[in-house]
Length: 203
Ligand code: TYD
Image (cartoon, rainbow, N blue to C red; front, side, top):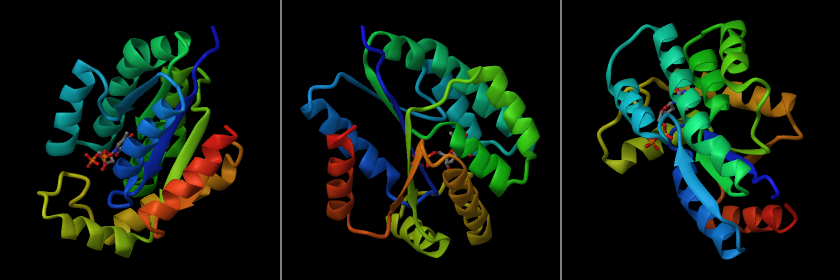
């Protein structure tokens, strides 16, 4: 049995990641892959309960990071690793790069603490491919404001916060160029889909 691929999608809130997540899952299914679509925080029954807390309850930044990784531990054990072992592909709307970008870049939690949690929970496991949907913070904030949806605890953050989150994603993409691809989320949805089609034709 060939092990499946683990693909993660990242980017600041408002970059359009969720639209591309849904499209990519369908695209891979059309190409004959068995695909599990999931998200973080969440992806399991317990993880979704933790997500509800994370998106609404004020908490210490280390509590936030610990809960993100607690949800991730459950996600890996119950869903991600069993699916990959049975040959399925897993496409996750966010994973650990989000913790380095939001809790690290955004909130200022030290990379050492995040790396300790990453090592504990993942023991070296990493996505096969990570797509970073990149957009200037100003644009992302105005897109978010335009949706009319009530903003969650992260979406209520300032433009400066999103600027730091974006920078943290870009720094990581430079550090891990073989795993992470940056996609210009300022392009139209159609243009981005074409780019993804080309990328996955050879993947
Ligand atoms: P998001 O994908 O933006 O959900 P939605 O599209 O439904 O709003 O994810 C929820 C939030 O969780 C997002 O603002 C980023 C945050 N987050 C972290 O801060 N750290 C993490 O490790 C993860 C996975 C998410």
